[in-house]
Amino acid sequence: MTLPFRTLVLLASLGSALLLASAFLFQSLGYLPCAMCLWQRWPHAAAVVIGLATYVFLPFRWMAALGGLAALSTAGIGIFHTGVERDWWEGPASCTGSGGLSGLEGGALLPGAADAGPRLIMCDQVSWELMGLSMPSWNALFSLILAVLWFTAAARGPASAAPARR
Image (tube, rainbow, N blue to C red; front, side):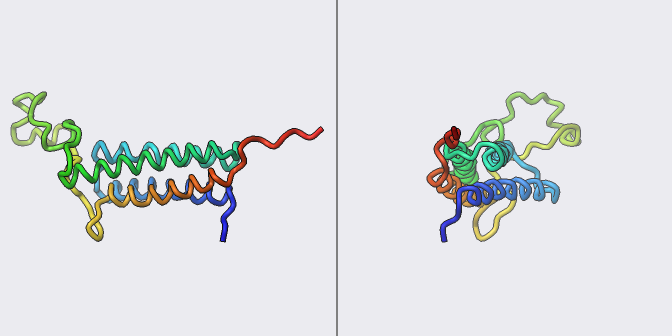
């Protein structure tokens, strides 16, 4: 079965919307996002906007290719985040255990000081996993599937607007 261009665009953008909604659901359940988790949300939001624009206004293959790049971006961040969680490579010092105590004042180390400000969620700690895969790993996997949908749509979509009739 061959899915048409608009159906592929709809499925890919709804997939990003579902992954984004899942991230917010997990957050509402108490799984606060780290910095890299938040970075992974932006390309999904872009893919949803691109999908809406492609479906309604600009049904061109280059728009679907942009959606595919957004999906690949979040997949790449998810793979990088997974590597940081698994200690395959170093993550950003601002949200990993390698960040040290620089920039903290003495009062921040006193008991009760942690309650005074926002909680720092570490990017190198796995907060949830299913079948051995953490949230960033699942995001990367599903985002790669969405990228395939986007690029399949790009291969099937119109190159430009239909010529004007005379």
